[in-house]
Length: 256
Length: 249
Image (cartoon, rainbow over all chains, first blue to last red):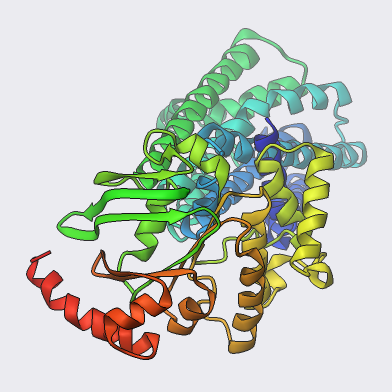
């Protein structure tokens, strides 16, 4: 466990000392929170569009923020692999599980801290603009989004392992755009229906925001919270297993 | 007593044989230089000895442990400073050292004690709180070697430790390496003649993946019929290159 914690601490410091990570993981999502709140103020109530209402927006932005943690996971892993840093580490007693856990843990803490800050900002905004968000709902939603954070981090780990320092961030950007769109961060698929809703339901991102939004309203219905959360948990577990397997296979290939 | 032994160690990449039937023995406390031009097989040899590559055939032993079958045991007793400096850029010098010590499983007190000791031994005090990304090439190399030494390895592999350094930084690093002589077995790869000449107890000249000559400086000079290592190297290389190219050995 010492080795995992040492490697996790190194990764945490590498990310937190890069100013770009603050811009992408914190400043940009917070800016979008403010901008979309202003946009929401301009939308007539009669339109029935609630996706930018602060309780919905908070969760959307939290999931959107997690995708940037994915980007930095991909960047860190691909950078480590492209240089000789991992070569040095491979010559130490560290094993593949030490590496994957060492990448996963600090990213998860960063994602949680990021989501907490986004939710605190949302709480302040909700007190100003209304409707007020229930702090307990925020807390439950924060916990509900943990599997979603794991899922995104594992996608970053997978891309960072499989692709180069140049390709991995590009591919992560595609996932950022795709997940924010079909994850219903910027539009309400349930009100759109049709093919768009079907596409959203096929991918796991829709369920991240759905479970988080239900939790914030303390709505723990089977269809609104339990099943979406279960889907995200299963996807996170599957991606954790796949990314760990791929990292181990790549490490084995590197050492052959 | 031998610390490293290879028996017909061979590594092939497709049709290319990077290391060909390498058999050598390196003693405890010896500083052994693998001297050769780029692509001679020096780094591949180090990679196999430090369990980073598996041999296509043959076997290597470090401290009596097989590099193929007992890689965990081998990794506990070796330290590696790769060709590129391989340090964590955003960590300070102290944090890099503490990180490496923690990776070897030492507790907090031991990590601090080892870090303090290595900072003093390597005179890293003036840059100890500086982030690695801001260090000059010479300091980075020193840090890289210090990181490899944090676990008190029995065998230290230095892959081209002074590559790209200016003459002053190179001399400074030589002094640090000289201080380590006798304390552990050191395998150093280089293509700088004066480096091998200055530092090594024994030198192996690698040509096209094979050992063309091995011995003390005097023995190499005698074999090459020259009075300096560069001439001896050229003579030995020219005598062997045709044979290797023809596949006669």
